[in-house]
Image (cartoon, rainbow, N blue to C red; front, side, top):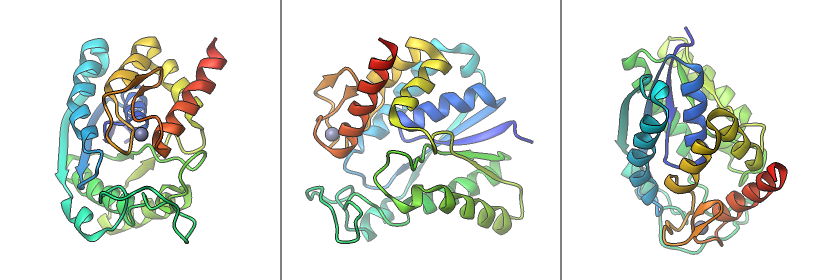
Length: 233
Ligand code: ZN
């Protein structure tokens, strides 16, 4: 049963690592991305380039890689007032969450992914959510996704598994996972082709990839890469 998967693939470091993880594990893999009016919509442009490079460098993965779905979720941008969907400064809210939190985002993503999976006969949904060194988003937590897994399986009356291979590891381990799965070639694809920066900066290249180097997403990615590089030096 666990042979066909759908990966929530944004074009970022985490979801690209998850895609490699899934291609290493399943016999057939499709991908889905969401256009929700994110300021860093440049990550959507990275998706085809990442898929193309994976096909080129890893032909055995390319054979397993099926259809790529992109869904228009602009409604999410229009109903949310966040620093990820509006042109405002990133700051902490009174709730203790940064204003980059898009309420309901992962709940919607997985629900729509489950609908695609139902139609395409895919049984595992794979996402790069993590609650180890994350921004505190409650819809990235393991308990939330466990609960959602049960709800979706009940609501579709169909067996469905949510897999989150990064849930209990930090960013350094995520770089390490990529190195273990695809060696330097995969690490290089992640560095050059994936996008993480909240501000959508693709003009500055660093050891850890493109980005402004200042926003929380860049800081996390850079810090993880430093720890990973120290470990492998
Ligand atoms: Zn940045």
